Image 1 (cartoon, helix red, strand yellow):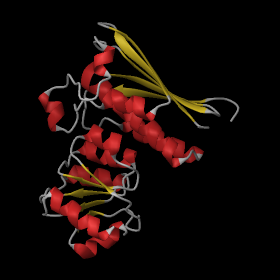
Image 2 (cartoon, rainbow over the protein chains, first blue to last red):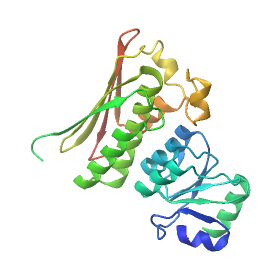
Image 3 (cartoon, rainbow over the protein chains, first blue to last red):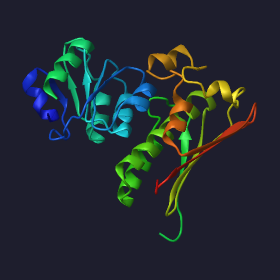
Image 4 (cartoon, chains in turn cyan, orange):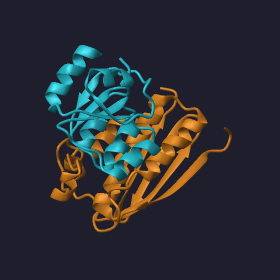
Length: 107
Length: 142
């Protein structure tokens, strides 16, 4: 499943820098150092965090995309940073658990 | 490459939200050098954790990255408060960060453990009241 492919299953586009990127697994968490320690490259990262550091962590940890859950919105400056650093960001109103369950049926 | 490549950064201690600029720049530079993506990932995460630590605890510092034929060496130097108990600081979950830092998603007590996790060697030289220097090496041929 590609990042763009998720858009056909209810996930919304926030920043799409590389929609063709393949998703290989998922990591869910809001503590950024846990994400950097445990998430694998090409994972979809499910989180409710939406500050600037999220963009840096997603970029450095090389995740396939960030998925913001619970209807969390991305502030404009964070959106701009994500665009600049080619970080894919999607969103959904689903709680994190439900988003992960849906994702597991797709990837 | 015959001569080592040296990158130097000043880490601004005043702006937590923009911390990571040095790590992002290093990631770009290592990509341009054609290093394997997993090596780049390890270097940039280890360095980012160090940068964040310098901003949270030491009001910034300096970072040097030295790239040779067989190794990427990261040297992070600050003039912060030093680490009182290194063994304790190395334990996952131990943190002295404030609630503000926690609300930003940091301060989980994983910074130093992650730096160790992603480097092949790590040395901590710290003196309370004087500062801390951390040297990490990531070998290219392992």
